Picture (cartoon, one colour):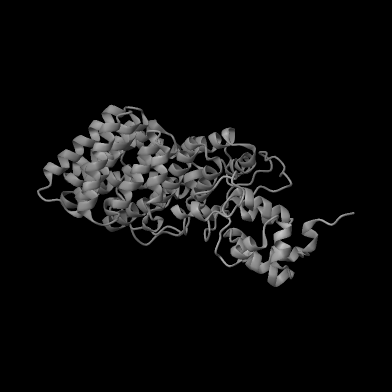
Length: 496
């Protein structure tokens, strides 16, 4: 009986359970994996090359870090050649060879409770988990596969723990259940319980509202839904009980908290409650008599109008409130400039969704000018506004307008390390996936979605809008990608 090429290497089962092997698989660092095979399985580069149907020079280049393995096809070839067990394949981000049993209600396990309440951040300028080379334009030129018909991948995953989150069994999102507590609070705002010392502690309320912003921008939606409704009630109590400057401050805090609530409800696809929350945000903002707070609440009003497909009204609202802020502020501060620019970006997206390409680009140009005047990538008034953020919106608008090539070109010009807000980084990856789907690059769309899920699990797992993208990938992908896409969708609980 002839020997298989992989029989030249004897890989003990314990090799795949080593901590350094698992770390290399999670990072998709095949060069490191080849080094470990040499050190712990006594495998030469020639033996590895024969087993994986590669040239010895290619194995050498990969082991030295001069080439990276990036395509799904080559990952599959290496996994097959080395006879990786299913746990190792999953850690590498590939579907197991042995299909898992179908998940039923009886066997499905809920997400660990600890994941719902992660540790809080320490300030408004959030530092998201780093992902090296997520959008490296030179990867196309450094592709590793000699076969010209194999598709190239754009999203570099070296150094990113892409697949640890999907090993758990996340529960399917249930927007109706998640938003029910908001309904009772938003539907009966005039029922005010008696004041108490906690509700009237202005410092505590300020800290709590800041935490809602941190949790929202870090995509910690599950934890946010658990405490935000009660905070809205506390703010209402405080606004009805305090007077003078303290009351004005509470109105501004209430505007901010209702803004967060509306944004969260939109992500959970509850447009009715989102409209109520946005209206209460604007009502509180006007009561604060602060032009910047009013303009900030106008952003969520615009967003809510867009969600209801009132796109002309949304474009007009964003432009009008931006002009009003520009008029009401004698000289722009960094905070006012950030809110002003963010309003222009929101109007540009609304115009693009309305098919008004000229207006979209006109508002983008004005936002670019505001970002240039600001000069830095910041997060003032929780806008994440700056030069990088305007480029993120250019990617989004290009996708909306069907300009997939433009979207990818702009995405390649963005340094992910400059995106401090997790939600914004995940959104860029989701937009990149949408662009690749438009382009017919299904393997790259799959990798971009996996990168987004690793960056912000709940932004992918709990949003109906992103579920639609995953379903589109599953239904349209060729067989070489569909199997992994189906596995990904199943682990997210995405219905087909």
